[in-house]
Picture 1 (tube, rainbow, N blue to C red):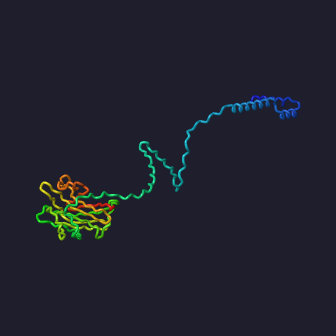
Picture 2: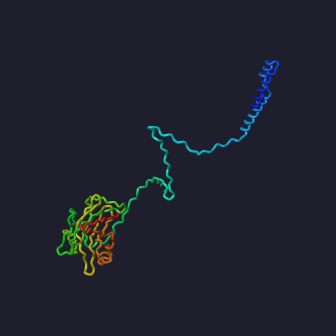
Picture 3: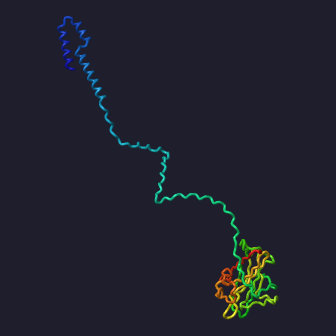
Length: 299
């Protein structure tokens, strides 16, 4: 390019020197570009276009990979409470997780219970010494109705309490009247009965009132065993209950643990001394015992 310009300048100088009409030729030379200059410009444009096409044809290089990182969180503003992410719920371990209990269905209302029944007290032998008349009502339940006899074999004082119940509902009978009482009689501490032929005397006999709630109470002594040396009856107390609307009950109450009870009761093979339901357990310190009496309604 520079060589062509130098040649062009030399040609112009030669024309200025040897031209006959220098003004016209110089003006035409200055106005019209030389052919060499046009060729140089055309070749320069052609070469630039080729370079542009070559650059466009080259494949673009892939941008280098960068590690993908989350942009840093902006610091919290002053006075603003940081947002707390919800804590992840712990996954239950298969070995320790337990199923949540299912709610139990609400129980349906149960019907009213049927009346509870009791087993009636077992009847026992009346014996020869029952006395139906002349027996006083026991108005001092804390005093023994049976006096001690001098020379007797037993002097243990006891107190017996209990309720008279009806067998159908196992509820107490309604007492409180002059007709609601229990006939009680026994031998004394020497093993002797009162002569029931003499109604003016009632030793070791009484009529125990039944309260409005069916309760009763009396105090006495443990009767002595009686009979022969080889055959003795165990200590016992006779009871008779005759209430309006109920069947009459005659029975005997024995003392639990006595060695003469049961098969050793040779004086009365038909008596119930071996029946635990007819035995009362006494407190060794106080001598108190509880004996409930269950009677049947009259049919």
